[in-house]
Length: 183
Image (cartoon, rainbow, N blue to C red; front, side, top):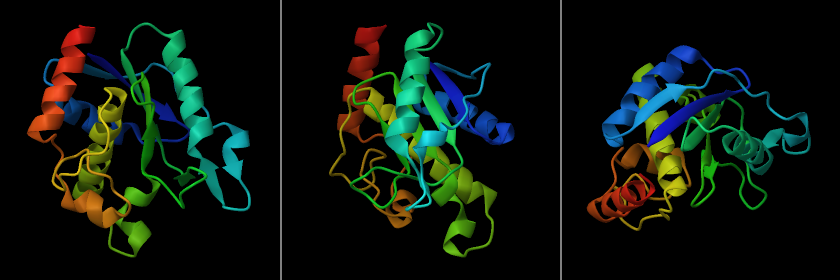
């Protein structure tokens, strides 16, 4: 599987390089590259009342990009703004399940957001878990009832911190079957 990391808006590229090298550990028969182009955040995605960005509109832009290109089988958009879907106060990410496009937001993954001191290691760990989670959705995986599984739903940062960065056996098997069938 070829994964493309797509910066959406202003995103630190050093951070993307860290995610890139970690993704191939979880998806061992894959390659991961940062795309040659960045996407702007669509202006219409900003909701003035909520002071957040609508994740659906950003994800749709990533899907259009994913459909236009042929280099990657999956595109993971990375944005550094606060995102939401209409039925939730915020989300850490969103993906088409199954599909080629996914999105994570770095905004609420930073320890500073919760009044804690900056911690690059914790921040990268959180972002990596959410990246694997959203890519899992693109492979058709749903939320897993197993709390340590990376596919477990995180409705707060507590659950993101609690879960592992790996799939449980059942989710791993399902992801492997999907990747093999696509290969």
